[in-house]
Structure formats: structure tokens, C-alpha cells
Image 1 (cartoon, rainbow, N blue to C red):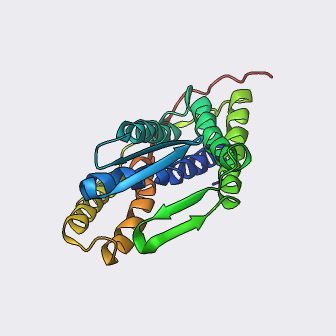
Image 2: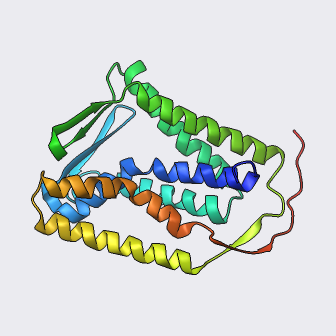
Image 3: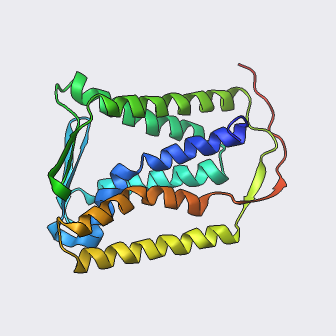
Length: 223
């Protein structure tokens, strides 16, 4: 599947979904945990933070809207402006991971309340985001030179509904756990991994499990 243009686009879209966890985790924990949960996101050495719905919560919402829009376009409407937005998304993530250690002279450290986690990923994060950026650029370049021809129109199937129900069940489960469980204990050890995997579940909800008739082929463009 990865040998086909469509398969490569799907792979890049799933990687985009995976990169959304850094937004989804604080956003959902703030909603389900209330004002007791404090979060902070560093973006080009500018710290966006808050507690509950206070502070810079709008920053997370805007990132989520863009991220989910990219997932939708990657699976169901890969024409412009998807290629450009895809490169910008991964380019900013890569540049941000380089800016902090190389320009600001600080380390990239992931802090988590669960178990007192403090993980230094100064070296690992730019490798991961850099690879995602290169893959996004490679696909976008091929698309600009020779657009994906005759792509089938994506329909909605029962599997989309199943994953959508699963997503709602996940939201209900983490909300109940956050409201009734012990903070900074077993509850967090369950909820945090679920929240980190949730963007993949969003992608599975939007994935074109059912393909309809093929669309007209797009004309090729010369360099």
C-alpha cells in the first residue's frame, strides 16, 4: 500500500495525527480535569500556559482545528491547500524543536505530573519531527509535479461509525476517571496514554474505509 501515491498520503496523514498528541493531551486534560490541571506549551521560546479554561487555551483550540482539518483533508480532500498546510505544520514543529536548543540555548524537556515525569528529548524530538517534515515535503513535491490522478472519492462506512462510537466512549471514560479517580496516581497512568493515542482514533474515524467511484484524473504539471 505504501508504494502507491494514495498509500503514501495516508501514511503522512497518520503521522500528522500522531504529532497532534502534544496539543490533544493538555486540551482534553484541562477539560476533564478542570482548573486543577495546569499546562504549558513552549512555541519558539514563547510559553503558552493556563489552568482549566483560563490562560492561553485558545492557542490549543486553534492548533486542534488546524490539525484535525489536515487529517480530514489528507484522507478525503487532498487538493490545495492541503500540501502547503501539511508542509507548514511539520515545518513549524521541526523548526520549533531546533529553535529552543540552537537559538534559545535551552533543552526540550517534557514534564508530566504523572509519576513526576521529566523527559529530556532535546536530541530525539528534532529527529522525529525532522523525518516527518522530510516525508511531508517529499509527498508535497511529488504532488506539485504530478498530482495524484484518478483518486477515488471517499465514502463513509460502518467502520467510521464504529470508531466514532469508540471515540465518544473514550471521552466518557476519561471524563469519569478524571472526575472520580485519584489525581496523580493510577488514574493518570491510565488516562494519559489514552489521551496520547486519541488523535490516532480521530484519524481512524475519518479514514476512508469505503471508496466510491473514481474521480476524474488531474492534469500533470511540468516543473
